[in-house]
Length: 356
Image (cartoon, rainbow, N blue to C red):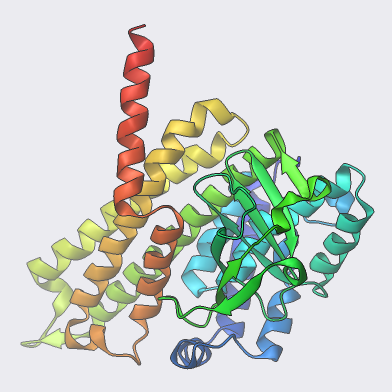
């Protein structure tokens, strides 16, 4: 799965264009309605989103994709977090589409047909990263965001990814997740993982994992960015005792702390994206960021709610949508405790190796 380097000015223009498009396509009222009733966005909205070509971001141009590099994809993922793009579209783009592209490049006519359908919006699905290789038993279950009418799901574990038609799984049951309206479902895989001709292994699977990691980090950062923007705007307009509350030290310091957190995480994500092709050199950094970025953006969203005072807790304001997304991404990244434990284990292993 190779992609050409994307010109920096081209990336800037893509970011601006996508942000403007998503602002128009995903108004707050539609997002709140989807969360309230825990149902996907309407068919018209879904069609408008599909026309953006999101699924093909990381697919090589020779296979019909956009062929964007890692830095461009990460920048666009941040826009997705700012504007709350449906979670299933992320997994389609960074897991399902690359898996199908790798299978198609290996000669699978079945995967090529599915990929064409996905890029054209005729085939929908989802994808998930699991902590350990699944064994293909009846006990194997995944929690995955599925697009409306989903037909396929990509399951990635370590250096092995499998594309599974949902028609072949044991069961699919709707799940009431925290980030509602995203089509989350509990899928019992049964024996559906046993098809070698639908399996991607080795470097292509590891590249998928790296791409997924950048998408999760970029999206979480984008959600935090939006929370800070809303807070800064509110603090400049809201007055207490005849003064804008941004002039009060407690508020100004909280906003500054939010900005520092965002800048620090942005630097780490940028370094990880720049080293996308150097797998070994970025593994430790990626592990640290999967813990640090969701935790930092959670703090930013909590601070945003506090800056807004009583309004911050209201349903209509919508800050909870970004908070829900960050919490969901933190879960998908492995959770606060397990990711911290993984960092510690890697640190001890590196120290041991250095002293052997």
